[in-house]
View (cartoon, each protein chain N blue to C red):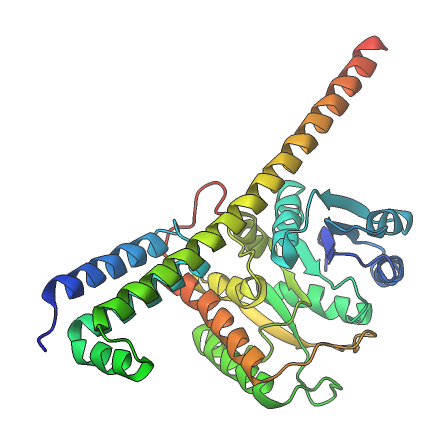
Length: 241
Length: 118
């Protein structure tokens, strides 16, 4: 298979401690791909560390969130003519060994979502948060007419059609970037598949997630899906933000 | 008590207008949700004025309409504080962008001079 022009996009906000290692391991696994670190208004040395590790760095003047950083990445990918874009977290949670599966998977569809839920996965969520995720997964799978077991996963790849779409319309809100973007893609008739990926646990302690948090989480995610459903079919011309 | 036709109509118009703006993508969801919620609440109390009477008795307000005014004022104050907050943030960000543009312009003209000079 001819190798497609691939961009690995890493949104990073104050990740000076891990970004160099992430860039290096991505480079090692996919020497053919270009690496773009979108420095999302970091106040530490993220940009310098990333550039030192050999990545191309685009620095935003202030923090705009993961969704905003990915908007920048998609715009860059579209203008530079990339045929594939893979989003990877800057904190080292994603295993670069899975990159091949996400990139090769694009030959049969427009978006590949790396799912953290599969028989060999160590990843587990419980309680109200799990119910919220199951509900989201069920809704999006139904819309997609094909299973999307982990719609909030940030480890995913986009093909040429998805890059064209997301360069014009990509939600910047919390959860809009993951869940909302999938809803937009489904609505525009893009084909979404999923592949199992490995998820490493964060080194830093995760914040406690209780029932109230899950309810808010679900509310915001539903809003992100609903907003897509409500909007009139035409994609916004120019900047949608 | 009989339903208040005028209030119900006003609430419906508000709901419809916000929904229309949301559909056109002219209003972000996070703002729209607030107004949709308000208009639904207003519609509810317009159709069932008895609910307002019951509520004011429960919280100990003599005149139901005073409770309505009080809640409305509190809500509007909260919304304007939120808008002031968003506005302040935007002013800060626009200033930052202006600075970035000025620096970029300087960098570009310097590059141009270097190129033309050689």
